[in-house]
Image (cartoon, rainbow, N blue to C red; front, side, top):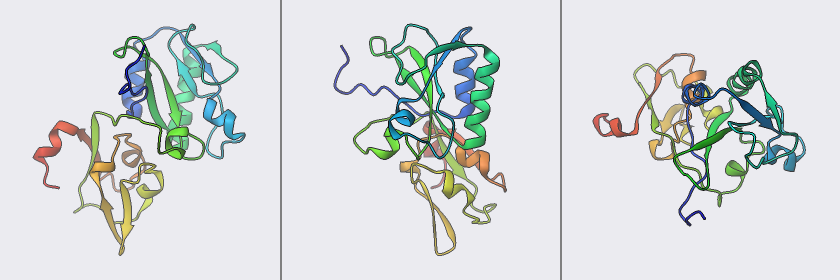
Length: 189
């Protein structure tokens, strides 16, 4: 039985997702339950719920075992379509990661339902504002609402940052880095 404070998902960067994936030799994929429920996802393909075991209850239909080359294609889709990696924990052993959902703001239950809980990742963004051109490109991929433009200037609310790293991947100035949440004390906010 899981406790009331159990949160199944947490957020990580794509690099962290690759590390989790590389700890496994076999993989299964199914259709994302959120994407199936919505009907059509405007951001990405539907078969993006990756599992590390064949005996996990899938969130959607079409569960099948896939080779690593197919996992690589899922990772590329996540990068190209700006999807947030959300690993999910085993309900009986909270230290065990059973798989990774690749989520977006178009159909993901987390982004559309404020009641659904998700833990932030171990990283948080740090923008070198002296290098930022305030172009606003990163605002579009910040599904957590941490980044916004106001008066032609970039405003960052680190308390809303979940550490997905999408802003790092898209920044044309390369002035955003991910830092440990523990290191935030050392950075002048």
